[in-house]
Each structure stands twice: as C-alpha cells, then as structure tokens.
Image 1 (cartoon, rainbow, N blue to C red):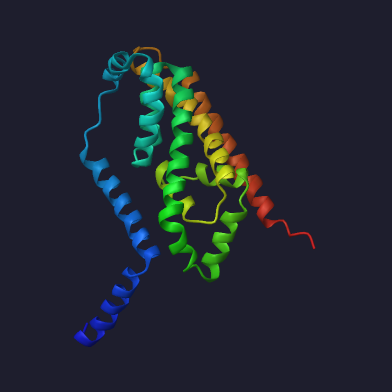
Image 2: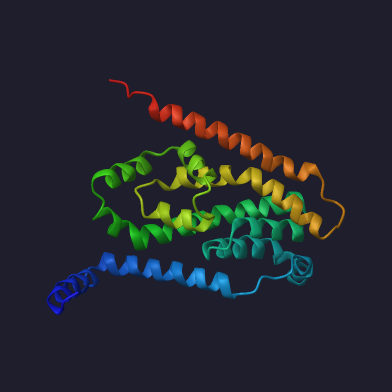
Length: 233
C-alpha cells in the first residue's frame, strides 16, 4: 500500500474514532478480548474444593453463588462450568436454582452492556440483509430467543452481549434465556453434585440434557415452519 493510499485509510480511522458510538463499540470489543485472555490464563479451581468454600461463606453462600456465577458468565466462562460448580456445592436441586438465577442475572448484565456500548454503532451501520436480520431480532418472541440459545453458535455470555447490540427486546430475551437453560442446568447440576459424592452419577442425571436435545429439535422445527409460513395479507 502506497503512502497516498494509507493516508485516506488513516483519516477514515481517525474520523471513526471521533464518533462516540465507535469509541463505545471499541470498548466493548476490548472488554470481550480481555475476558477471552483471562479465560485462557486464569486457572480453574478443583470442583472438589468448592463445598469447603461455601461453608466458609455461611449464609451468604447462595447470594455469592448467584452473583459470582453471573459475573463469571459475563466474563465468558462457560455456563456449563458454573452449573457444575453450583451442583457440586449445593446439590442438584439448590444448585439448579442458583445456576438459573446466575444465568438470568448474567443475561441481563450482558444484554445491558451490549446495548449501552454497541447498539448505536450497529444501528447506524446495518444495511440490506443485516438490517432485515436486525429487524428479525427486534420482532423476536420468547420462542425465537430459545431457538437461538439452543443453537451451538456461541457461549452464553457472548450471545448476551450480541443480543444487546441488536434491536431485541429485553423481557423476551431474559425469559427465553432462562427457559433454554433449564434442561442442561438440571442435568449438569446433578452431575456436579455427584462429583462430591463419587458413585452417585447415574443415567437420570443425563436425562434432562437428553430431553433438552429433543426440545431443541422440536422448537427449531416449529420456528422454521413459522418462518416459512406466508404472512397474512
């Protein structure tokens, strides 16, 4: 690239940085990159040590589990690991409840950050097919959110950030996020609980995840048929 060609490119980049929406979007990208690096570098605790940590927190352990689990998911830690840890600490039933509470809070936090830092930048630049896709997100019902959540396209936290940058509505997004998380939350919490009690793992622990797969196929099929149905005139 010649110096003459580089100058306009540098000028466009400088003009872009002068836009507040672009600076906020850049901050969002830096946040995601920092979370990704931390996820690679920070060591993971041994699940067998987690019950002792909960005992040291006493009555604050459930609150810490929900808040800490939400922050971990916002930091792009997989929801599977958070749910396994909740099951290992609190058992299958309470672990499921706290993991779902953490998922709800994490979805709200990620969506809010994505909306504040990225929505204006995206809205100013979507055209053509991207505009139609953004409109689809804006019209989404709870079923549509469940469908996207069940598709293996990205982690829980990353999807939350991404939804915030679209025109999606908050309440359907939160409801769909929690409903989609229920089957695997039950299954992984049961498996996590069995980690602290060797020999307790059985096929019943995997049943919710299997039911979740069946539900995923049904939901995706229903959504696909609804999308292909001609709009009423």
